[in-house]
Image (tube, rainbow, N blue to C red; front, side, top):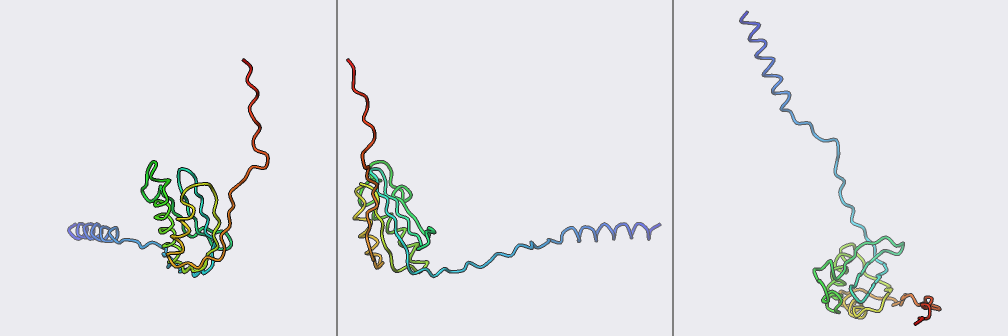
Length: 150
């Protein structure tokens, strides 16, 4: 009788020990491979309300981006040249980490942050090969409204 009770107690204790064993996950985290991309294209989209800078590799995959709104500017301060400079500086810092050195720049839009964003990229140490203006221009414009009848 006593031996049976001891066996039951031993079984309970071994079950507790087995249940406490933590299983390791089979998922192995891969080490981040540092990409070494030297050439890229910087897209500067400057509107009246915001400035967005995207830096991509030559095949079009975006490596880093920043906007004036993302950097904490709100309202009318978002459309200032200074906000564009801060955004361009942040995007450039991320691109430099990847190893980018040479850029060709495409500027789009009528905003005030166009030139300032370019200067910020240049100040970060990028070699700028070309600057292209890709602002869309209407060929014949939209259809005018109907004449007013009074």
